[in-house]
Length: 140
Length: 382
Image (cartoon, rainbow over all chains, first blue to last red; front, side):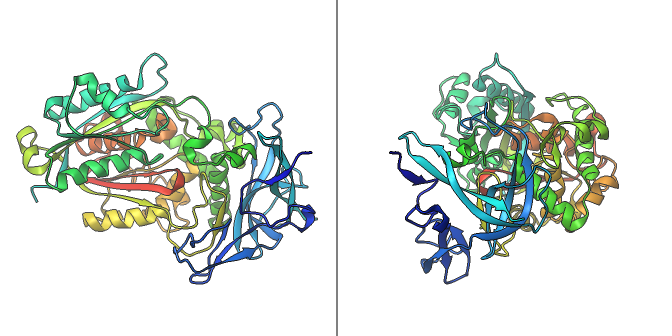
């Protein structure tokens, strides 16, 4: 049976099942307060080593948005491409994360709209594992 | 001040698509033109820096130089994304200021296929590419939308940048697209990433440019009218880099890298935005020209849009921008584009820009901004 692996090591809480309980994680700097996604021993903003693990809220809002209307370059599968909305999501904690937005039509997004984390199988890696990828879903 | 670097020669190979020419051949063409302009022979060059996107092959600098015959001078390849040519110019400047060399070449060469850049060039990780979150225009589209919402910048003002740059591109024999375009054509072209349309973007392509730098004392032997390299700054963007290649950020209050590099360049040159006669900047897309015109402190925040619609940035306006058509018209040969800007500024400061000539041009600024956070700002004067 295929294993589940994260889209990138250190960016999701474990275990990866059940998916509803998984959150994005990263670090918060005790020196400057900055948040960043993923494990790190250093603050990406001020280089302090005084960082702590931080689990992000699953809720956020649209900071800015667009629609990807042209297939992204390979290795993105060209034949199955359909235009999709993408946005900078501002999480409740203040982290900005770039994401595909689901649960809405192409022309539905606006500034400040509320979204929630939606983790799902994104693609299959070269070892046959299911890769768990984040998206955000519009809350209606 | 004998070690100050000045520009005595510039050369360019037209930007475009040249499937039958090797990248080294493009470079040699630009170097030949630059050396002829400087009245210097290749054997007199003491060091060479060559900028490229890093995607062709590692030995590209020496291979280009060896077209002039085997040489023993140091040759270094440089990569700094779309800012590569600026970083290259800065290395050449430092080699002269440090006092060891009097004649140094800065060269940029590139060959890029049609369409979006390959994900690795812009620093994307494989998972970003597989998720489809690696389309460079999406970042610019979202930046544009924020600017429109915050300051009332209009899509017509953004399209007008493209109209202006195509107008000047039509007058530039070195541009890939030498055709004027109407506001309607730009607005009605295919949407790539809302709200930006196809004709608002630059296209990656092939090209080369070369700049001959001399120490001030040696330059006197070759020319009576060198262009002074007043300053050249290269910086990386602080956190957050919410641009090409990236996927995460946090509101830190840090200044944008373009502003940091500009402030450094203004200070080193003792020149401010009000002293400038013309500006070349990173018009990867038309909205970028407006945003960068503000980040370069040419206009106050939110005034970049009106500056376009009021004609301030046209030739004949107070501060002409992208007088060679910008990369919207020239196309963007990544490693060479910055030195292509230097070619234009030098041409303008010498009064040789023909129909595109900015009256009484004395001081010019060139700016490039690349993936991963690179930015270079160069100030030239006569």
